Length: 311
Image (cartoon, rainbow, N blue to C red; front, side):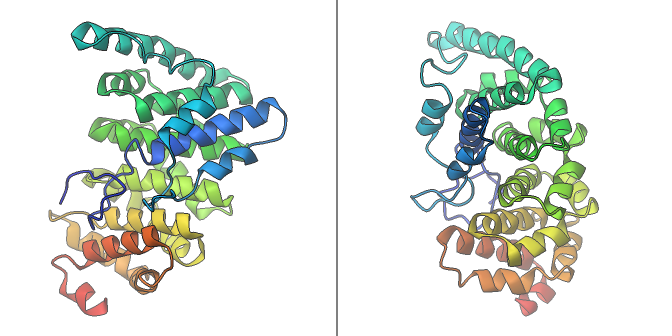
């Protein structure tokens, strides 16, 4: 069950939050934050989009169509035009590549509202774009400025950066996961789940760690070594439903897969006290929370007799 799954799937394996999951939420949150910033009222408007979906799918999500409308009501997504076939793909890819270079520059040196705009646009490109568009965004070097913004002094920028990182990791595959880790995002994300950050920032950071860990053994080890397990276990107990979903899914992905080193990962998570709160979450009123907890328990129990007895 190592394949990446859509969030609406009932597969116990957590997998990454794909483009239609963490990505669109990022777009909506960033879009609303950008609009609120322009009006000088902060980013509270964006927070309404960061919640469980009405259809019951797990984690941070919402309608991709709503994201596009909220973000760019007067014009289509940059790079979404062009014809079909090879020529159309090349046109779309080159359009996104040109736009991505501008986004990277804004993330590096723009004012706060410009950075929000850049994160809004690049996240929509990742969430709703075709594979060649996602590759163009990744090749622009966006992972490095996004990782730096995870440590920005402004809370709203840290939140949006975490959402953007999660979207890129979820939609960009192993190449994106590796690039984000190389950019130094993992320690910064772990700090966000450890800190007394706002609920949505912690949720976005947990979702990003979930995506970075999904099916990526090296990232699983780096995330655990950075100290993510204990704060994720704490979020199982103290977080709201959306945060609990992401924390449980992240722990499930950190438990690894049927490969070398899985046993040690399972033991580390169990010793951090994850099993009891995960079992309690099986009785949650929230469907996505129950599914994420069940998936994490499955990963912890796989070929591990001690954990099976404890569960």
